[in-house]
Image (cartoon, rainbow, N blue to C red):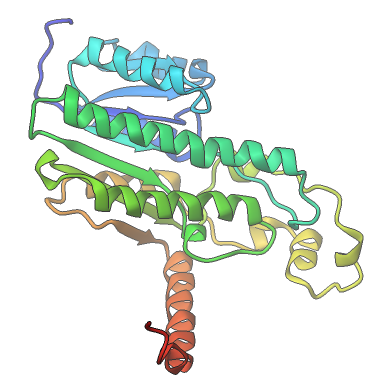
Length: 288
């Protein structure tokens, strides 16, 4: 391992070629910290590689759907920097379309990246924080979820499913780990952030049953432009908020950010509360 200053934190970020991953990588470097930036096409960050030496920025090719590549990337991070302080589980992609219109194989591929890929990165991050870092030092794991991991959204069924799965897995993981390991986990649940994921979406042909009613949510979305339907958030300003969470002594497990995300989450909570209160009496007498 190279003889380098060990004081700045070491970040391991997946999905750094565009969007929030790229913005967070740039921000962390500006803060004087070190980054292991991974992407399926790391050449997209060659401009940053020309500015920052390998002792500050390590660019690695990583497809999170390949578990052996994840293990190798963490090993290379340790060889370069000796430890990892923050892991950002950011790699992912999305599609739009009615569930009946979406290609199922493409949906399986989305889940393979957004859920299984994130799961394998999470497992390696926990193992690394516990077994590779100095005992008790631990680390921070930031899970790039979405408010769509808390509330459904028309035309985003497969993406929503992947984020619901990430949320459930992460809540379970957080409940399992030993507090002595000093590992802090936060689910980041932003509203719509402009990125390559949202800019490159191509709608599949509509299912015939959904065409007749122009008032259906997905019909409105297909006939308009996505820019008119959502309020975009700045990737840079979002990255600054996510960075801020890593300085909190006791970060929240859930961090909902963006007015759209907060509004949707409050509606979901209110809806669930109303249903639970309305049908609470149905649970009387169920015990054996």
